[in-house]
Image 1 (spheres, one colour):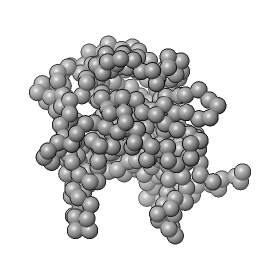
Image 2 (tube, rainbow, N blue to C red; image 1 turned 45 degrees about the vertical axis):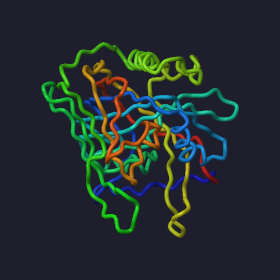
Image 3 (cartoon, rainbow, N blue to C red; image 1 turned 120 degrees about the horizontal axis):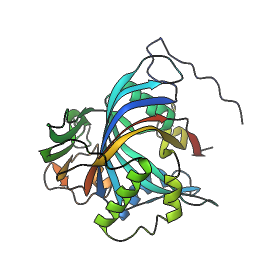
Length: 321
């Protein structure tokens, strides 16, 4: 294999893509567990991930996913001295079982939708690891007395048409009748938190996850990082219907410091705007579309965590030749 050429950095010349690792500190994350129609979600996974490798690597859906909001007060590259930025993000996180020939299945997290309010975070995430990031405006509760309301705005196209003007609009809203409340930590680490979240989820949706063997979950929890899988690709300059580069990339998020975590109180609802440009409800198997301009769904429960983490160098799971 030929040695890769050096990346020509634009540091000091209007830089927008940073080298990794990245250090993400003073993070508060809110997340809501959603039940999903496995067949509908699997169709989306097949069209976005499984189609690319010809069966060499495959991904299987589980009957739930997470809708999350994140606020990080200090984000910086640890390999290029530039400065730091805060950011806010809104995303859907989909747990998947990854299968490759001759290997035991492994649990990964896929991020098919992610809005972020910093352009450098968007560009770096897309270029390095293949995150499907878009610029958005994210609103979160400012303090414990504020209403428990979250929202994400971005560019929307109501209907696909050459006559449709794209408009900035609210894509996602999460709300409760109560305030966000004071945080009471009940988990002493990531492993404790994730195990209880899985147990509570199974209790809500009923049954057991035969697709998720105990040894697979144990292997996931035994790591100090969360493995995220994305499809990294770039359009060809000559024929933009083709990809000049296409790869399945794993990018680990390593826990550096655990501050606390626990359950959110109150009942929440999530409103998702109906538009051709973001077909979230049908893509993720979240039920029938609402009859109006949006669909309202009830999450199973919500939770929060506070931590520091690093986004580390990735690995190539599969690449087109």
